[in-house]
Length: 317
Ligand code: Q46
Ligand code: ZN
Ligand code: ZN
Image (tube, rainbow, N blue to C red; front, top):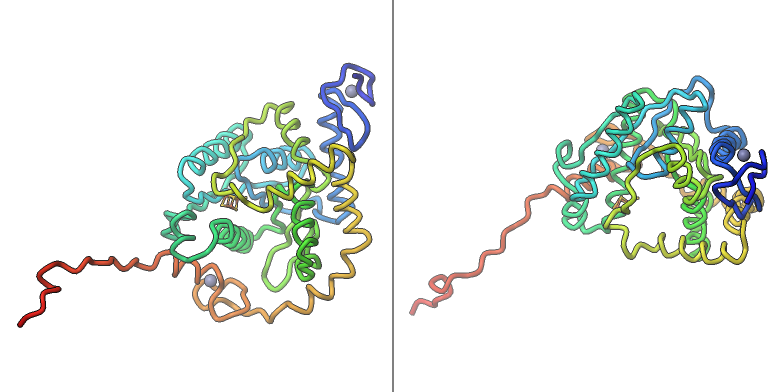
């Protein structure tokens, strides 16, 4: 197995490119793919201040490494979600990465700052854990970008993530979501610009990139992801990819080039008027934003059910 570029010994095959690469040229390939996505979708300007949402996993840490290498001004933002050992360990990976590389890091702590964690708070608010988690993360990313004056928020969503979301939205014809599924969401109404520079890389690519760059990342997935439909779609797409290399790429990029525009109207029509949340001031479409409502419900005191004692149930005669 020889590297396509230098003909030296290859360490990885990339079937969708029908090629093998040595360590040096695989790392270069990953960086080139990110630079290509940034330029193709006009994601970043050279002097942008970029806030990267970091989780401690391979994608977000690879993203920090690559954007830093490409010369962007990056800072990390981590949210501790209060998901037991998973949150403790992932925070450790992020803090070690940041201190080794002098990456400025902001940390929000859901239990300390807002009084609830995802497992208990989502139950109290009667929401699925990933729904409460996603809502919290979106709100806190937006708020951190707004308050810190960042030009753009970058997330580590990769090709596997985006193709799986596309598959779910297509299977159920969620046209308004299809209209908004893009690697760049422009800033609007007080919401920051959001970009996904890893859309040309797969999970396998980012894992190999971290290995070759000596980036120590959290391998365990969040325990709350078990049974998630998103994982099921990823696995189905991986099965398709085995017999049809490049299928994921052409599914996602074919959609962006040939179909996304057809759904843009559906997304636009459903955009409500934006105002400021009466509690936190965040832009939102109702009196109070969804995050403040979640906090209220997740931290509401739980009524204690008292068993009636024998004496109180006695009927006086
Ligand atoms: S962290 Fe949060 Fe994910 Fe865990 S609770 Fe679900 S959404 S699975 S990316
Ligand atoms: Zn090579
Ligand atoms: Zn609010």
